[in-house]
Image (cartoon, rainbow, N blue to C red):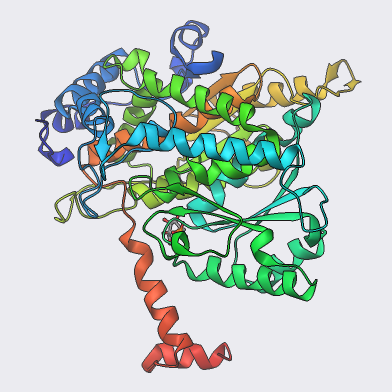
Length: 522
Ligand SMILES: O=P(O)(O)OC[C@H]1O[C@](O)(CO)[C@@H](O)[C@@H]1O
């Protein structure tokens, strides 16, 4: 049995607090860039040379990992322990991509078999849509998949779709366009519906709970549009939900695919939640390759050697930065246009998981937990908020992601270099500029340096490397939650606002809420 202790109860907490962080201006040598690197799945690597750690600090982080039993806790998780204590649930998203440990039986079934069965059902459905066995009422092929969902039922799948859209087009496996409706702002649904031929759309209603206000409102919005076009909504809609949700019992859908309560919304991209739209857009084989990349990365996360476990190492360095160095944000900076929505997905993944002030037992913790996450693709970010990152009063650790090759391959050679080379040159330059700085007598032009970053480098963003990238961050967030002794798998903090919004809509308000309601004309 593992012991769940608060971080500040551990010996390692004290030992780490007594360390001095590394001065990057001096420390970032060529040798270090070569050595401080860990292989990831799909040929990628995690390089942490520009982090403020040295061998002594890494040794203490390894001790912390042992003392907090981080890998053992992961083992408990994938073997089916009730890790989500707040909701008394198992946490099984890794099972959607592979079997890391023993068979996990819950609700009277083998859970890996259940997830694979859903994948097979989705594959069969997608193949029938692609080959014209399933069509619209006129017998025409569907051309567009429109996902209706919010939070985890939108962000991950949308980010993954955008990440592979161009890759699929150039590699001959693009099957259908995908669009996404998430916001309850009517302009979101209206704009998407205005951009498609609804008669050729297959709508994927995604809600684990089947009760989310925004998603059910957008479902009605879409049904209304279908009715106005003289179409039968039940011939155009499929559902992805949990078997216990109200949607599961409805006959309003052409087909229904299931996940369950053991997969948190923000961890659901590899379940039917991402599976339906990605299999329709790119074909089931591409979705399977994405799952393989994630499975390969998950295996690395079972290694208790921190220098062979990139997610664990990344998590531990992040904890050191958050708790010992006091940095309260992290920027995610993919130098890849295809990853334009990846930071948005990581915002939910990280902040909804570890934005907690009480431990797994509901007791307040006395140390900072999850950081603020934000980001934009480079080089766009460089011309936006990098000023603050380089010269602002706060130090913000940076997580770069870069690929040696572009996805589409079309490029131009201008002034002796291609666009891809310019992109990669920029990320290399930024790492060194942040770490080493540059002295200038004019303080306005002075760069102090000492601003830490790490970089994940891959050959190209493919289904496998995307799966590995996703799993890396899911596992990092999980390990950090274990260190902080918080439950990373519930999200009670989103409830209060939902309850108050319902009150406003029912006109059951008083005091400040009543005045805000009036100001907004509700
Ligand atoms: O899939 P559902 O049940 O509609 O939930 C959507 C999202 O809402 C949240 O519960 C937050 O409100 C997220 O955790 C979840 O991803």
